[in-house]
Length: 381
Image (cartoon, rainbow, N blue to C red; front, side, top):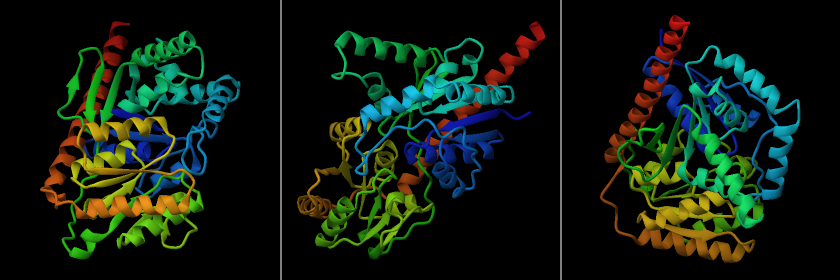
């Protein structure tokens, strides 16, 4: 019987959902049975565009952002607390998930949904749970209260979170810059963030001149979009614009299931510094213009992009459309003036294939090992 995997992908950002659909298709092609759950109706619609039917677990848990993708810390803390302690929310989800556990060999938590954090350290369920997370996301979670609470309290919170995560069956930490897979021998695996495999290559000069823009759904501020569009126009760069928050805006697309293909063959990418966008830039060797807001995980990513020498520029939105447009125009001009990179989409394709292969092999192996363990327990019992 094929391994059975339950994959819970939070819909706070589309990177989790993109990873879920990539891995679901790869795992199914390898013979696994995969059921996907998500946490919002919008997330379910996003996955449906990739042929994935994903029921919504519940709509109560979500990280909170404003219209410029600045993280709202107090509102997020309040939302998480209401979710965890309201009797009809997290406990109800635990009950729903426990029914799924009975029919799954492995349960993937992407990324840090509280119900699976709880189940991942309880003895009855933890042997099936694997947490999937970006290295920067875990760091941001463990330091969430640093500077906002007394030092000992903040460190205690971080320690409890780390202990809770590490009690699970396995952890898969991913990063855009990781190389070959690594394992510490204690359930912690390190893999490069998976990226879609690009096949169709458009070598035309027009395709290579376009900027591929993706802004996640938290971006909704019209003034920010005005500045971005003006800056790219001033730099003489046409743009392929994608962002659910700007779905009603002229020239923008709410979703594009083929955006990664556009990004792989663009002049440069424009995106917030999420792990998925940085991974696409890294694999397909594309310059990237990083739009930075107050989002702790992404601030860490932007810093690492600089340390690792990824070809990029950073622009920061501070509420002034004209200044932002000038900064975008300057950054775009600098990226366009750089010598053409040695890599292209054809060379990046093998890197993407390798990344997906490592993930598929590891999750299949973990699910298969759990099935053998479960059958052994039944025989011994």
